[in-house]
Image (cartoon, rainbow, N blue to C red; front, side):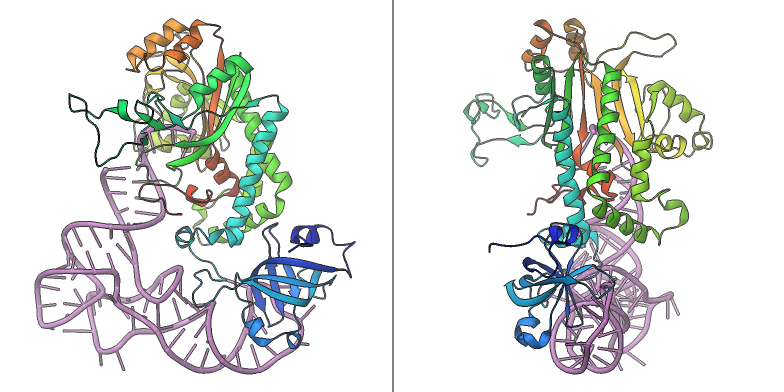
Length: 484
RNA sequence: GCCUCAGUAGCUCAGUUGGUUAGAGCGGCGGACUGUUAAUCCGUAGGUCCAAGGUUCAAGUCCUUGCUGAGGCGCCA
């Protein structure tokens, strides 16, 4: 199996390889004219054309060169006579590494629905669309680490299993080693978690933020990048029960530093993909255009995928306060015509339709909304100084809203004042005794600090233009689905 | 959790006001083809119309329930 040449290296620079012999291995994308094999080995978007003189090969062997069969070819690299490619491989030796009986293999060389692909997640990565998505997903993960490392941040691993259920970000998955058929009971008849593995109830984490704050107040600048779990019964194209989240947390940052970081980070990530994955992006761009041809004009994207990404990195994100957002919405046409389903009222959270209006209609670019009413936000967000003319107190929270997918980042300056935090926890019924350590961070060497959470899959969704979040993670976990 | 829509060949879909033997394209299979780019051309097989009840002389088509999927909403990242 040695001496394999990767197709990417042949296609990117073949000048020194012409006339030489090469061994390639990959999966058949097409076998045309009993003569031309389009071979893809996953290293890049494009295929290598393998030319077969069929008289030289056994007919039974060539029969097995079917869609997505895996083959090994040895031959000579030459300039192509055809128009579609510059270089091609003239086969001298051909070996079937893995057959794919076309009578039984579910994938077909044609457009198949996203739903069908999802049910065949073990094969869908072999398609153009999904291989492009997952190459970009990798690139994005790498860019995240590169960005933070280059800026002096430390990567921190926060626990997956958490003993606190006070993180306040949603329903949690219980983790237990107890025998569910024979649950031990206390005298009062409740489940006796003293007999469980950790001797207390535990769950899968919904956020690493609270622990990341520990890191920020010691190492200064930290970030987490790991899986998170929400047991919400969410059935939408932008929610998963298991997803990956990036959470930077920085000491001495206020809400404005936090927004600057969020904007710079988003732009860096998008630029990285524009610079390093042009072929994959171009394919996804074309794919989207093909899809939108059948849509009525008003449902199409205003720009192609690549143009959208360039537009986002070339323009400043709009920054407004929650109060300004409410005013804009109340003066908007859809509001005056009664088109909004939900009320726009200071103190009520902005709904998806409101965010969409701000991002897609009013500003037509990413928007950062800050200073939300305190009563609709989490306990750890820093209480702002009272403002003249506002109906209630606000917190230093910010959301970054992107076109199409809505909230991609949610963050805040954290409440560093011990007494204020204790009062907020009391008001919002957060158990102080469980978060004793979180409170002690404010008692001993506390500091102003801020951070945010970025939904990894939502960013992949935005950059690849995929409509459903289940198609940017290899094995999506959603209500009623944990196959693969 | 709520609302809406859908489920017909391997895949993507059509199927009229309920009416004889359920169709197409692609894919498969058989054949032709030495410069193809989702190759092309000829031929061919392939159906528990999601499931269970019901209405009717007659149900793919109408009704009820269930299952599965999608879109939207809520929750959020």
